[in-house]
Image (cartoon, rainbow over all chains, first blue to last red):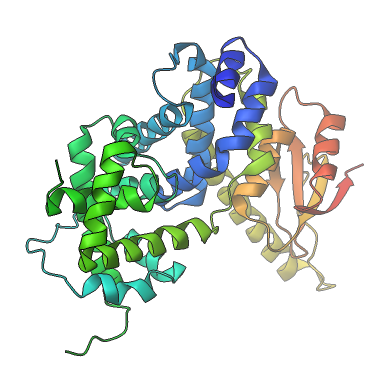
Length: 182
Length: 191
């Protein structure tokens, strides 16, 4: 059993120190994930708090069929959606590219993709669904199966979602890259 | 069976993050080895991932958030803390506006021209100043953990008056505030 699953059992038994240990281990990545979707540090802090409150109250329902991180990110994913609904926010539409003809974009965005500010700028332009998928893939190094569980959707949907997000990111980053001479 | 180019492209991000396994890993790697365009795209994705992982600019609530969590897990079921936080923020804003108004009034009417005192009996048990680079979220988490609320300030000198929430322990609150030396620049008990 991995260390987080053991902590979850202890939390289910009411062990506060286990909750503190889990919080210390995972609050930063969960916060980063929430912040990437809300773009508001205060709101993100509140939602992180709500996520760990729910972990405390629902730990006994964790059945171990997925990794603990997947379960927790799933809670965070749903809470952000709830928050968006309550706030009446609609996801930005970042229309996927119709024509995939960017043979140069990979090469031109290699340099730009090394600049954190440019990557952040391009991430901000993505819709919530695309940003979530990329964040889970590249920040949390989750497999497409794990991301599908977090987002409660089909594995194929996640693959195409990340494919489109990646294309949009590369197109955006290419704009920062060196000019390509033909 | 080999992967189509389109299938390989779909799986490329997961080759970049190292989560492909077994047959899928071998097939995507083989496709990359044979196609320079795929190899270039993989390099871009690996760069992007490395840049994102190195970009540590999100300052999470940390120990202050943990203190708040430990306090709240004993509380009976309640709604999301966010609405409470917003109410707190609104209350703080109103207090700030009142305090500023009172300070202006004092400045205008005090013949000595000093005008640095806060008007009225606010019921504050402590006065504090905070370090200028303190994030609002950090201060808020500390105040919640210490079970105090802002009842006056900021004054022209940057002083905030804090009162204990109902049922809160003064010594425990003082200890928490004192321990947060990264946030609290000065702390005094109001006689």
